[in-house]
Length: 117
Length: 111
View 1 (cartoon, chains in turn orange, purple):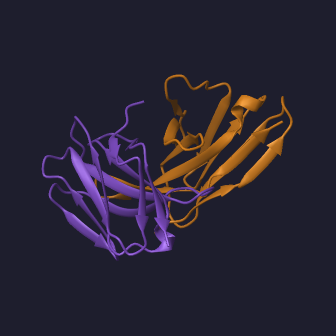
View 2 (view 1 turned 90 degrees about the vertical axis):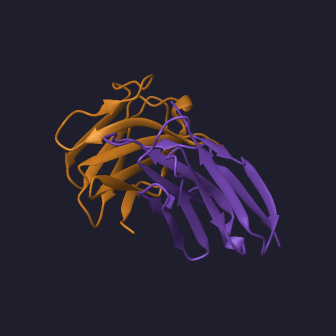
C-alpha cells in the first residue's frame, strides 16, 4: 500500500505554545489530505479537508484559527495547533487520497500524539 | 458528524475462531473500506470495495459490498493473536471527498 508519514509521532509542549505536525505522502501525490482527531476508545473525527493550493475546508465546530492547515505541495500538508491548551491533547492522524479511477483509497499516517502540559 | 452503524462494538474470542463484523447505513455509499488500527498507530487499509455485491479477500480476511449499497461486512477466518485491534469500516459517497467512519469493533483474542 501507499505510504503516508507523520512527524512528529509524539510531542509534549507547554500550554500557550504552538505545535506543527507534518503529513507527507512518500510514494504518491495527494491533492487531498485529511486531518483527524481521535479520543481514547473512539472513532476518528474529521477536523478538516486539506486541498493542495487552496484553503482547507473545516468541519463544523473546528476552529480554523486554532488549527491552521497548510497544503503547499502535492506531498505535504501541515497542521499547526496554535496556542495549545491541555484540552487540545489528543491523537492527531492525517490521511491522503491516492486516486484510483473515480474513487480514492485513503491511506493514513502513523498518528501524532500531542500532550499539552 | 454522521457515522456508520458498526457492530459489534467489541468481541472477545478464542484463538482460531472466525470473526464477523458489519456496517450498515441508511444511505447509499459507492465505496466501502475496512481498516485496522493498532494502539498508538494510524489505521491501516485492509480491503477496498468499489462495486455492489463485490466480494474481496485479503489472506484470511474477506469483505463484501452489500447489494443494496447500504452495508458491508468483514470476516476474519482462523483468528490469530496479531488480529487483535480495532477494526473500522468507512464509506464514501459518489463525488464526496471525505469518508464516513463506523464506531469501530474492538477485537480481543484469548489464547
